[in-house]
Image (cartoon, rainbow, N blue to C red; front, top):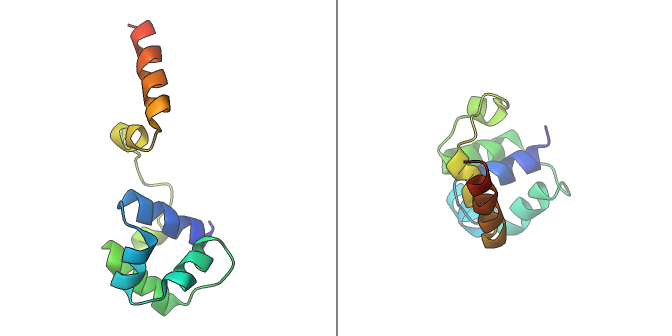
Length: 94
């Protein structure tokens, strides 16, 4: 698991911008962006601050694979065009 990718996934799942997460965690937005891109590492202390801002524990952060992705989460992440195509497809399988 890439820590930066996991932070980005959890941040987007919480519908939080990089700026807001950085502000709530008390770290710079530039550093958060670099971590998410895999261009910088992160300390345990900063990761704990991020988890606190996301309202999760460190255990939950590293507990990959036990999450259930809700259909509404998947649908909400689609573009308007993808949503329309999916709806059209679903109508064909009634």
